Image 1 (cartoon, helix red, strand yellow):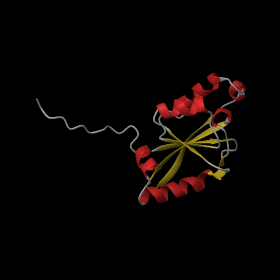
Image 2 (cartoon, rainbow, N blue to C red):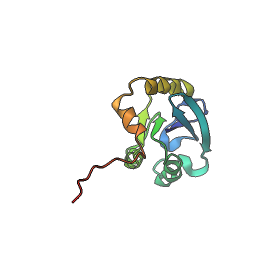
Image 3 (cartoon, rainbow, N blue to C red):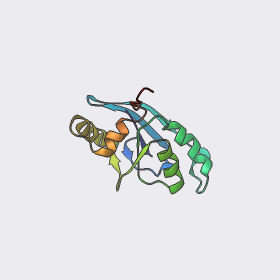
Length: 132
């Protein structure tokens, strides 16, 4: 499963989705995690009310199941939820590796419903249809 983190310093979840300078994307499973890529944003990415700044950010996390962030506007939240990406807001900056360590523990135990749903992102739903 891929997880994105909105970050200003590449170490902590400390950025508003629309204003994030970086999005760190990790792959995680029951054995651990690894950084896949760090996407950097600059230029007009930080203008308030500039909905165009969301397009490259949403594209960057499109195949992620979860995005951790400090805050997110209603428009951006609606757009990522529509892509079946679960936003998780942190109350205060958290170290990315601490969040990942906790997630690995959850994956090895009994994941809460929101995490089970995120794990199934992109998985084909088996359908049982009676033959006619």
